Figure 1 (tube, rainbow, N blue to C red):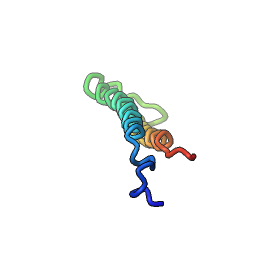
Figure 2 (cartoon, rainbow, N blue to C red):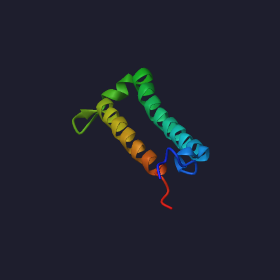
Figure 3 (spheres, one colour):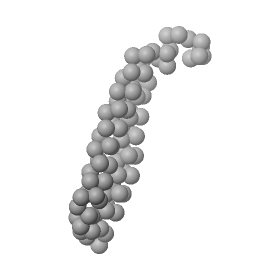
Figure 4 (tube, one colour):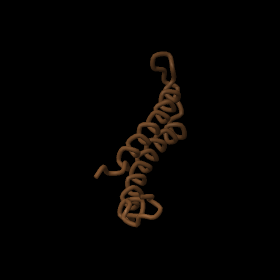
Length: 86
């Protein structure tokens, strides 16, 4: 049966929508804190971003870390929002 015609399908469950939105908001706030740390270091402690680790400055490490964190958080969100297998 098509999910468009089945009112009991989980796509039509507002509780699931609310739960997924809550997960998304929590993960967004977590990423926002990580990004805020990056912006704060750039704005208020510019010298810190120039510290070298393994020949690469902290700004680049932090920037790559933000990209990786975004991908990890997206994967976590996908796992949390997976449809249940009943």
